[in-house]
Length: 173
Figure 1: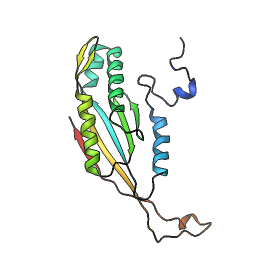
Figure 2 (figure 1 turned 120 degrees about the horizontal axis):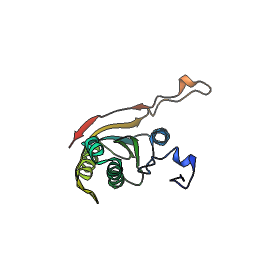
Figure 3 (figure 1 turned 45 degrees about the vertical axis):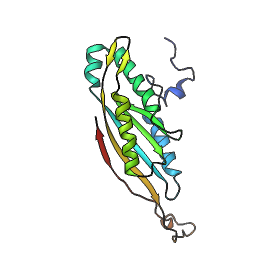
Figure 4 (figure 1 turned 90 degrees about the vertical axis):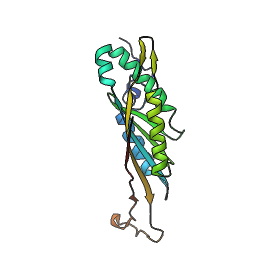
């Protein structure tokens, strides 16, 4: 058979073949890059999404229906992120959204609720309407550095710490 992605093996290694979203490998690179480039006081939110009731649909209606639902979910998740965000499929029915600029746990919870509502809307396929839910976990990181710390040259131990503060919340449909 032919390739499903015209860009070749390198692109396939970084993208999920069903949804064309970033895959787990690319997510690691994107997350590392996003965390490395956070400026003092800037924050990042990671939303972990696990689809509810997907497995029975996939098992009872076949993988073609399951794949169509995953594509529909992917499209909806893309509408829940800003231009600076990234959506990845990291497993069968697991997705991650990484987004910079979420200022508070309350803002992250608003995004989580938007995700839940988007996924919960009926997925109208040629095989009929399907409804699934989503459970969303949120983790936030914010860079806080000391204004007074001055690193000494040539000593890795003298680099000022970049502490991250996490605010974890959970939401479910």
